[in-house]
Image 1 (spheres, rainbow, N blue to C red):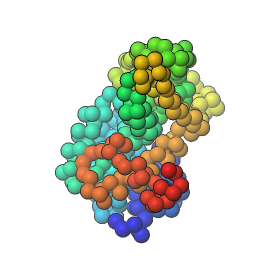
Image 2 (image 1 turned 120 degrees about the vertical axis):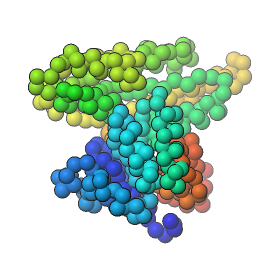
Image 3 (image 1 turned 180 degrees about the horizontal axis):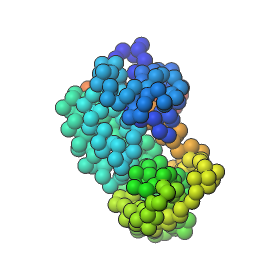
Image 4 (image 1 turned 180 degrees about the vertical axis):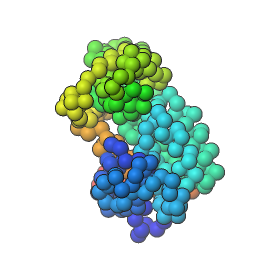
Length: 328
């Protein structure tokens, strides 16, 4: 891929994240959208800039796409589609099941290497942007501890995991930081906090008619990796309430690293996000990673990769000379 040619991007999936990536790619002058793959009827999608293509026809685009952005959910879509698409294209995703990332990385690594592709996983804002912050903070302050707080806001991955449960018509999940725990960390006090100490989860569910609500509640609160380790409240509401009260997708979070550079000399690093639209911000991060992935491939990288493996300059459309002049 020459620098004079735009990076050719495909999107796999057209939910909230897929639509956000569509906008982000369109706003990037060095990238062009080729198509959007979907399991639905392509004519029903209403895409903004390019026609959609049925997912079964994805192999026809081999050689026409530099990077495919997989926008499915982590619970079921990516674990199945990730390896399939790594065999066809260079790929990017925002897989966000933190505890399962090592196993997911290994499966993608095998598929991508076999196809001579590179696949960057877990490239949203957490995991992703926050992961980079944790790495740098830990490197600068090795004698210390890092605490990450999420919310208050809507988690797309957790919401989608709930929507996959039998009997659920719609759902939204809010991650809520425990404010007392936040204040304790900021003050340099207790940093030995459990998952349950730091956050609670609140889930609003619209149940299908006749669905077993007790079974839905039990499936949510016992779901491994998503809810089982948290104090989770499940409330059932009407579709009208969902539309009127929970249509927005705000989110945010904060990474705090506290430590000492010498005995008695305390230092702290804090990095926070306040987001009006979680999908749009995640889409912007993933689109920037698609640019970086194309450059990573050109540099000879194959197999799976994460944000830790990407030179920072690869994310930017600017030249190294521009970056040195403007940002150093």
